[in-house]
Picture 1 (cartoon, rainbow, N blue to C red):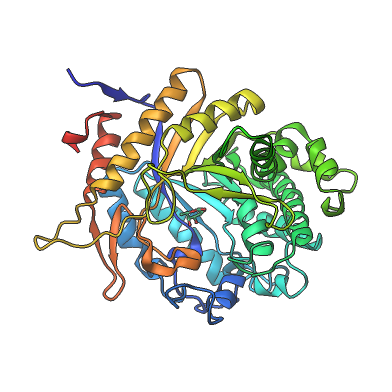
Picture 2 (spheres, rainbow, N blue to C red; picture 1 turned 60 degrees about the vertical axis):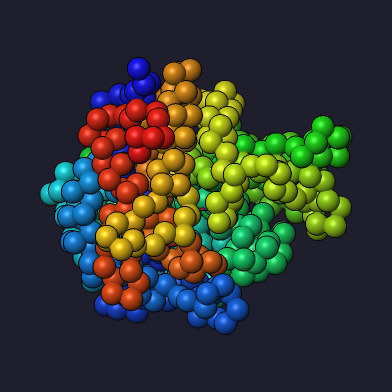
Length: 453
Ligand code: FCB
């Protein structure tokens, strides 16, 4: 007898993407530039010297891609709206052609029986707003509220689920502290302020969506969370892991769910504490219908006094399996779910991203045999089910990603898709993992034996 890992019939299965990573059409139909256009066009920022100018050409090929999703039986498709496609200057003038694109996409998905899950911000901030200070500036939150209202007025009668922000931690810290992402700053204080403005922006968007969407959609936010563990039981490493978790996890979840910043933030980093004004955290802690969790790996942390400010750094434990980017650690998704449920009790949890980069290629018979991806997804779903068995209310699982796409600072060398994309011809080929996932959706689960995948 093999164990069949079964999920509830109501469980939502889908895939996730983002605008800059798939759309292309970076200056078509009145779109304004985003900070990712600027960043990718600046030599030295993207490892393979590529850009998202064309990406997977989803802007033109979406009908074909919706048909592909339908053939896989996907129930939900997470995509993001490119803010500068809709508001080329970030605020003020609306670009009707940009809004029309998302309107048609939403209708196309609904007609195919697929729920659109719309992210408002997945990192492509309008360059015009960056020029006025970007996320470290409070005005950007007001602009986001305005943009959320524009999107809600147009799509808020049909979209069943919205995500305000994707991974504000990455936008704040990769964008403003390590400088690996747009806008490429290296300033810890700006990073913390960028985190705070995003929380205010999130609050404003929740308010706009609640008041303007006529179909009572589900509203959430997507955070990247990892299981943070000390590299040893030494006092230094334990403290370093605590600091890392403070910034990755509690900096966002405490305000969102408890309406306050952790006391350790002020105590530990007094000079960096953001400018918090009365009412900011009330708005940020408006009740959510679901918490989106993006999970990829764990972070094993050791103390390192040479790392400015946080004095903590992730290390790669020996003997673990790795992908091209991270350690593969399936129990971590269970650990994150159990911890979030224990400490924050969200109404519902959606896995809004989970996936793995594999250097896939097309075999002579035209198949893409990405066994490692299927094994990764299977192992993580077993752990998701384990958390659900213990009462954690997980209601959706979205694979990152539908298509191979532009993986930020790595460019196109990281392939995350269930569907292979030949970036020369834009041909799509469903990988073995995509066929497996389609069967999981159809059967509401899978046999937990690797020989059968
Ligand atoms: C997440 C991002 C997503 C994708 C995956 C691999 O941090 O939200 O856009 O790049 O990582």
